[in-house]
Length: 133
Image (tube, rainbow, N blue to C red; front, side):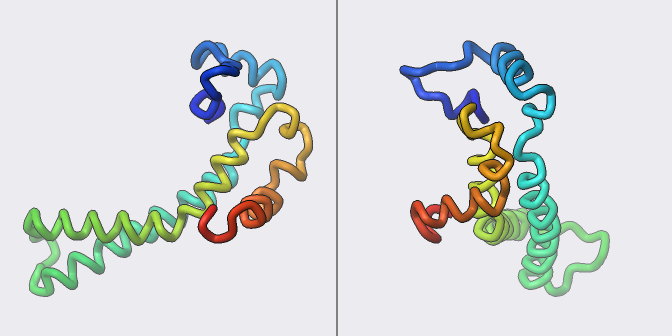
């Protein structure tokens, strides 16, 4: 994430390996995993929601489908579209928080309060309200 969000004029990293080297030098190996807790708080509900919504959509569109039967392609497409929309709408706020934590500037990384999920969410909310999430 740090490599992806760097700006053209102020490039801090020359590539992936350089980014890994610099993060390990400044933050240790733990710096490579910053933001993983918030990422897991996004992923766990997302997968549970994804499969639940897909199954519900499939059953609503093909009520006569028996276990082991394959649904038509249009049902797979409709299920995938509705599932993606519902899942991302639900988990996008945590994704924004996670991305902000992962891309914190070096001067803010050392302060545990600045990289907390609650602090980051409040900061985003103050900066743009619900639309920012």
